[in-house]
Amino acid sequence: MGSSRSKQKAKVAPSTTLFLFGAHGDLVKRLLMPALYNLTRDGLIGDDLHIVGVDHNAISDADFARKLEDFIRQEAAGKVAEGGKEPLDPALWGGLAKRITYIQGDFLDDSTYADIATKIESTGTRNAVFYMATAPRFFSEVAKRLGSSGLMVEGEDEGQEYFRRVVIEKPFGHDLPSAVALNTCLLKVMSEKQIYRIDHYLGKETVQNILVSRFSNGLFESFWNNHYIDHVQITAAETVGVETRGSFYETTGALRDMVPNHLFQLLAMVAMEPPAAFGADAVRGEKAKVIGAIRPWSEMEALANSVRGQYAENTLGGKSVAGYREEDRVAPDSTTETYVALKVMVDNWRWVGVPFYLRTGKRMSVRDTEIAIYFKPAPYAQFRDTDVDHVAPNFLRIQIQPDEGMWFDLQAKKPGPTLDTQSIELGFAYKDFFEMQPSTGYETLIYDCMAGDQTLFQRADNIENGWRAVQPFIDAWAKHPSVEMYKAGEDGPAAANELLALDGRRWQQLG
Ligand code: BG6
Image 1 (cartoon, helix red, strand yellow):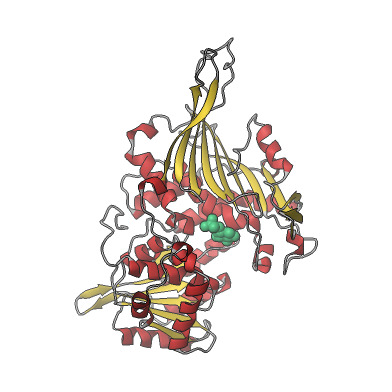
Image 2 (cartoon, rainbow, N blue to C red; image 1 turned 30 degrees about the vertical axis):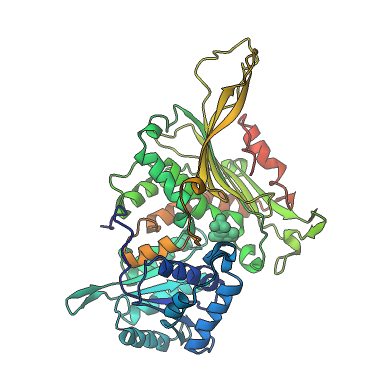
């Protein structure tokens, strides 16, 4: 049984030795260390957390800690302290830095794992978390060696139970067969309850708030079904391009990078049935069911219900922005998609007949991650023969980023003698009600892993169902490789608008 998220979250996490595989990588510097600092600031981890970097480069403990500090000070200030308004607290960092050490080792060499065992003895903290912030090709290799060296064995020490856990980053597999193979490999050497598969979208406050809104307010359930909801749009638009990740992106593309994981997590939050309890097994069971209910399209249907785009060069604000094919380590004739729009159907009692339109892209006009739930029109055209006989549909917009909140779009009568309407918003912005501490989104996830709460992590079946649902697109596209161009700074290719226009609908305006 997974533990429950209803607990008071103010408790300090259990003492842990946290091994960061891939210690010199970007994730550790940009997100994990700032998150660990923030957890320390918030009193959620104590002075019995030991952080151990593991990587192949040679560096001393002190230099490794200094390197992290320099990076956090200069580059990640916005994550630790918004806009640098709250500089790194020297005492707080000093306390944390004392407990940062480093193991130089090859991930494929057994002696690295012997050094890890020795380190656990020396910290005196037998609880261990192995965080795989490495290239994906190492996931199964590291897991096998953690298993064969006995490091995954949990037990008791002086009457106290201790745990061994692994955290695995995405991409978890490249398609359905590789995800199944990775799960099989992990489950040979550890149990499901020791595996924490991360999807960082689940660390975002607004994503977690979708469940709270739906299941702690009686109002929502009454209209949350195919009788009242016409369709759902899920968008993750980014302004950034592929940056330094050209070679990774060439073999990944927007579909694999964003859909089976982040966008399906958002879909699951909106579409899942109420779990019997707010615990890991119940929540993840409902998610697996709803993702498993996504209709598997045939090859022709997959092609008809998808649009692939790729950003082309453009001039924005007087500056020239490179097209995807001009990016570093990208083939000049690449057909990798940097944009994807899909229509999927969820075949269950609640959602039959309600399309879910998903889109995500890089180099779009604005950064905007949101869910728009469109309602059916009022049952009777009350105002026929007036100017308002065709009013715009109502919708609920759940904004994940950048401005977190929720807005109902309703029609109201404009003041004056004629009957005319205007869209108005009934809204809630997170920042108006809560003081938000600067955070990376990883804080909750790291904390939950140490606390043994798997609710916000993906179970094997969640991952496999996600890949199963996108596999028809992967297979169909492999036979018909082509992309439509859109200019950097524009909102995807024209065909994406046609996808909705064919159903008599339009995308929500971005931003
Ligand atoms: C990552 C993808 O998982 O999510 C990136 O690999 C993407 O390509 C990122 O940019 C988006 O995350 P966020 O939190 O900025 O929406």
